[in-house]
Structures are given as structure tokens and as C-alpha cells.
Length: 240
Image (cartoon, rainbow, N blue to C red):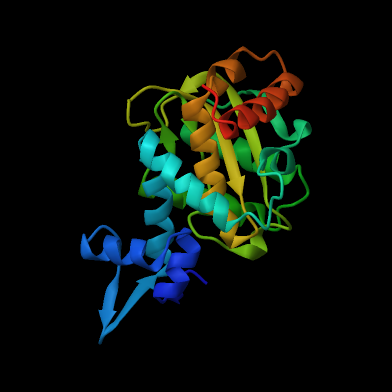
């Protein structure tokens, strides 16, 4: 439930951080928290929004450091380290979305997600995406956006997956560089531990490789899918 309260151990586990990391964030007043007597508590609703926006704002070094921690924390889920082969299927990539506005691209992404057969409540998913974007855009510099539900709700999806859309024209989606966005990854996570790691992984691959350029040049969904898998491997191998 979105009104749940985390204790220090629970919030550290969710964030893929150590107790010391969280205590440092508290000391610096960099994380939403409350004190109840001598206990630190963290509202789940606030932490979810804060954590995703923090990852989206990381510069390269901090992102790499965080990604290393989230990879270690989720190693039991993905033995090979690669997550995109399990998360993204070729048939769930739309290389020519006709959307021209923020609202219409969210609707088209939800429709694409619904086509996977893994979404339990299409309307609730759209509402949650709209609420998340209203708080702060998930668009990044370079023309990439990573929409995701405002709150983690395990019952929304049968399993974790992503869908990818490329619009025919750039959409002003609220990116920090004030440039239009044309590549959209909708992240749908059924496992709470995986949400932040998948967000960090996408940002890392986009920063360290030529993924975005190649996705724009790819002629079809098959080529886009091949780019995604190849550049994830490149990023994990540390190549530039």
C-alpha cells in the first residue's frame, strides 16, 4: 500500500543502499524522513517518488556507483546480469507511435502495455502514469523518457516487463534540456526490488553507449530490439 511506513532496514533494502548510506542521507537532509521518538521512519509514497527522481538526476559517476549497488542487490533475479532480454520483447516495441502530446503518448504506451497480456488494470495504470508525470517529468536530456507508475503496486502486473515506443515526431515532455522527446520506455515492475534497478540500468545504458542514436536510426522493431540487447551488453562490459 502507498501509505506504508518503512523503517531504516526496509528503506535501505528498497533503495539498494546500506544502513550507513541511508543515515548519511538523513544527516544531510537529502531524503524524506520523520522521527518518531528515537526511530527514523520513511513514508513509502514519498520514498518511491524521491528515489526514482534521484536516479533520473544522477550524473555519470553517481549513476554508475548506484547501479553497481542495485546490481549486487538483485543478482539473485538475473544470473547473467542482463535484464533487457527478459524485460523487452520485439513485439512490444512500437517504432512509429503517432502521438503528438504528453497525454496521447501515455495512452499509446498503456495500450502497448495492455497488448502484452500482463496488465491487470489498464485504467489504473494510465492514472498512475499521469500522476507520476504531474509530479515531475520522467524525461531525460537526449530525447529519452522512462514513464513508470507513481506507486509500486504488485497487483498491477502479472510479471515485470517494459514496452518501448518511438514517436514519429518529438514531443515536449518536460525534459531538463527543454528539448523534445521521441524515445519512451514504459517500466512495469511486479517485483518491488527490481523497479529502481531497471531504472538505473536504462539510464546507464543510455549514458554509456550510442543506444539512443541507434534506436532512432533503426528501421523497425526487430532492429531496435537488437540494439537494446547489444548496447546493454556493451554497457555492462564497460566499453565506450
